[in-house]
Image (cartoon, rainbow, N blue to C red; front, side, top):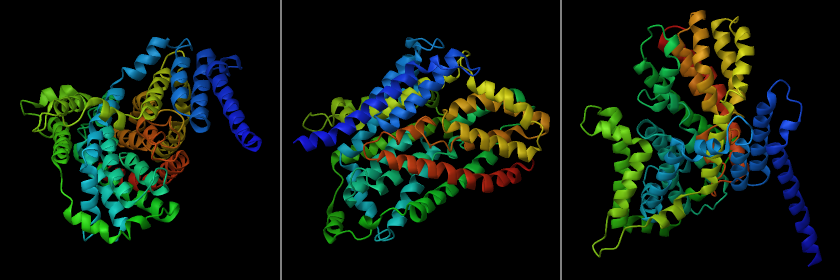
Length: 489
């Protein structure tokens, strides 16, 4: 008994040491010399370091909550603002409603049904890497029609059905690899779907520097399609040849599996879930593809979170023949709402807002120092150096902060150097999307660090590998291709 106590004590001591480090970073970092950053700037740096240290060594929940509170004590924002930027943000609702709604895919049995049918297809049977490629290609196609968060939650629900049927467990390396890749597949697409939020935002951020350049619809779409296919190939190479994940459980399925695959039928609940999935894809796609329909302005106004909430309301309203509901809110929330993920992502949103405040303004200070230097380079060197430099920065600073803060100013530099702002803007936005090395690097990337099915260590390994390998191949292939497509630098 005494031996057991002695074994547990070091773990407890390590926990409290790491906790002390986190709390010092949150509340004591401003006591250190400010190196020209000022009190608020040092506090912001400390909070970032505390969040990162806590997420790695302790846990996500209380670290994220105390981090949000600490942001409200910096003087750059008050506590009400730090909480509102986290929990009243559009991103918060874009996560929560799809998470709850799409939990019904698993609860209804639809995910299990699609898993049996997919794994028993003759073209895929006994070929685990073909199955993996099919999962990735499906996610890639969905990127063009469904925005980031619902695409991720939808594909996670479908994949976990496959993983459970094949016999994989929580924390298995292959599960983490596929779930992380599903998140990271939206990398290039996030800036390449001409009708998406990202492209519209990019256009508005560069508006003052475009000098008559029209929105390059076909060029951006073409680059996105090529980039997404390339991203799938990168992911498969990483999984098969670098990580060498174990796919054997999907290669030799027992005969009982194939017998069940022949007889399994989609229940009424499953058909309703299938209808919900199709409705989500259609309703989100209508405003972009059929903008002249009478319903398009209404759906556009609802947005992702509004459409998800609408479908959730309809699902809860429906009744079976016996008068009982198909599901209840508490059951869906219990299955689908992962608070570690929600708290982690929302804390990065508050951190993003803190980094943009006038009192902190770390990125503008860095930019003010660098722009005079990089503007003296050749056009190609300017693009390459800028991408590499801020790709490194964005691994520890929310990527959308980098884009919002810098792309307009850097596009202005492009105009003075004779560079087509769209070439630079597209490359910059997509390059900054290779931001998965830490939970603070991007909101989509943060999702994979707190999911119960993904081992935390595997999340870091996948994030670092995909960010590094993806960025190198992006630079080697997509930069020359972008020059060719646009016909000019």
